Amino acid sequence: MGIVFIFSGFVKAVDPLGSAYKFADYFTAFKLGFLEFLALPLGIFLSAFELILGLTLILGYRRKAIFQILMWFMSFFTLLTFILALFNPVTDCGCFGDALILTNWQTFFKNVVLMVFVLILYFGRNSDYNSGLPVREWMVVGSLFLFTSLFSFWNYRHLPLIDFRSFDVGTVIRAEMEIPDGVPVDEYETKLIYRNQETGKTSSFSMEDYPKDTLQWEFVDSESKLVKRGYEPPIHDFAIMDPYGFDLVDEILSDGGYSLVMVSHNLAAADQEALSHALEWSQLEIFASDFSFYAVTSSSSAEVESISEELGLAYEFMAGDEIMLKTIVRSNPGFMLVKNGIILGKWAYRDFPLLEQLDPHWSELIGNASAPLDEEAQMLKDAGAYEEFSFDMVEFDHFIPELLLNEGARKRENGVSLAFIMTLMMVVLLSAYISPVKA
Image (cartoon, rainbow, N blue to C red):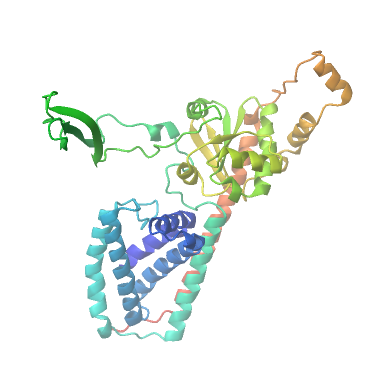
């Protein structure tokens, strides 16, 4: 039981926003949308609670109290997963985050099996012997809870330390979108509805036994219901639409240059400073022949227009599905660098550098090129004396990707170091306070 809860808590702790999205789905499904502001705090709390519950089960701390808490916790979630399995308001309970996706019925039966062990522990709780000092053990539990919560909050502020989703770094996107030969496909049951010409009553028939007498029966409608889901590729909803309704996915995946995709599932909630800083990256297309910039959002066109005007954003926004954008990157906005259809890097906006931090010279060139023309140059342009300048003078590939990816690697190393320090502190605490449990 301890191992199950440690695994469940850890995969949630590295992706607290994923848990927050799942809580938001629960609140919506149960008509509790007014509680959505609690989604993120509950996501962080639940991951820390499960991880610490697993550790205390293994360490043997305060067994009587812990076994009671375990019984209440599992009873509640077993009942909840049974309701989810019956009515299916949310297709995935999120019990193991994105690391292990289970259907609602699979989750319920998993909980039924676990309840057998929970009952054994619960009914034997009075026979267990606690030899450790309560104050010391509760102090260790509290410290571990604090460190785990901080670890989860760090993952929220940046990106998940371990990415269990289909858009992780190194993914060949097109390969993850393909459906292999010979895999099961979706199976549907189709009902044909006919009206009896004599009685006026309607009846349903299958595709095999529908009435052939067209004088007596009149076709009314047909209904199709999915009875068995087939194979679904890991990436099945990747679509980026331009303002004219054209899908740009093939263009991005076939591009031998670099495509920087800025993702914002909700522009109104996005960090405005980050949206403004992205302007220079979008203007890099002026000078780099092997660089393209795409801004993608699920916000409405009216909202896009209003925010773009307010912030002075000169780049154009493409449209994408909200769930897909949340899956690509857990940041608002976030950035993804793609070349030849391969994800080279992903960044939260807090970790993505300004262009001038990587190369002040390019930033200066962009500033000069984007500056308004003086009166004489404008007159020449209006007279048709020259067309707009083309600035395809440099290649992004020469040095910027290395600097950019090194910057991302440095942030990732900081995250790993943080996780290592927290683990070391936990070990020190445990070695200082743990007491041997007497038989």
